[in-house]
Image (cartoon, rainbow, N blue to C red; front, side, top):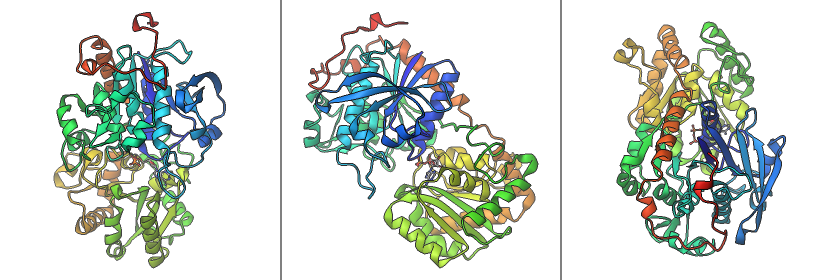
Length: 512
Ligand code: ADP
């Protein structure tokens, strides 16, 4: 089984969120199941700086976008092959892959990710001098939507699936932008790219993919409703038979308190006193009062509306009346950043906020905190609550999406059956957050029950084994039914693209 896995982020080469973690750990798990999986991502300036070595394998003619070099390397610390598309619009810019330093989207994002998709298309069609054609193309999020749309309209393409990591980001651009991209005109149709007069890259991917995976069963259901569908719920309802919810795994080697090199002290269930050393070290590192009694609440993540931080801010002064501390790491929305800094100034020594991206500190907050607060408005899967469970740091979450699927609220029945591992708020408002924190505090002050909660999380299986096997089953299913007539193959005949010549190699000539 040969799979081309196209993504815009891969940890540790470029990361803005969970997509990067999944794009490293899922392919690794599939590779270990025997899949010939190859990754492709843009060669950002920071990515090239982080990669130790690569080779130039070919030069791709991308028509109106000029040329890109195809680089070959490996996922760091792994044998999974990695391709990089090196084009000046990626390789000459540092920092965030989508936004400039002021947080605004790069004005040429449509061009950048169209040319990325064009280059991926050449790989998918064995036109990149590799003598390798995938059986399946696996796209991820809006950045790969155009790739899947281009492939759908070409009968020589392998079948594709897409994983939605976050439906809120869709890659929407106007008609004039579409006209300048040199894409086939017939992609401007409502069952491809067009959406209410704009182009919508994610919609194109969802229309084109034979299967639509998302990263938790609850989110798979939620996105088919107007409340969570971000305008695409109608399409997702239409495709409901093809929408699959598969909870993400984590990299259990990288996120392992027993071996984590970022920690002050490693620990397992047998020496939880070492977890307490991490709390002291975190208080010292973040300038918090040294206080073993206070319940230290950790938070890590992008500062966006999605994460419910406005509600935390509204509740924060009341929360701080309790015997708690708050350690937060994140960055993003300038107003949220300023509000959290103001909160820190109002509660010196009890609230500490670090702005920016810091992988090591993210690990230390997971280990050193007593509880982890994640009151997301919506959460496709969420990885931080999984990390916190594994680090013996019970999460307090809003029960949506993957948070609903992975955190089991603590009450009599769940304590009795041994499933309780955290605290689940059914609403997202100030009373709910105060209630969540109070309940956590109540149990935190009962060391025996607390130790039970910690043990449940620390012994759960968060590996990829089950979900990676499901992805593999879907790949096999798609590959074996590929030749049957599908709705996708009934799509209108494609126009010849002005940007990239069409493939000449037929599927029959592929190596098997
Ligand atoms: P999302 O994908 O919505 O950002 P997830 O919980 O799925 O949320 O994944 C977030 C990932 O990004 C986690 O690995 C988390 O540790 C990491 N992360 C987010 N913000 C930061 C930051 N400021 N510094 C370090 N790691 C961060």
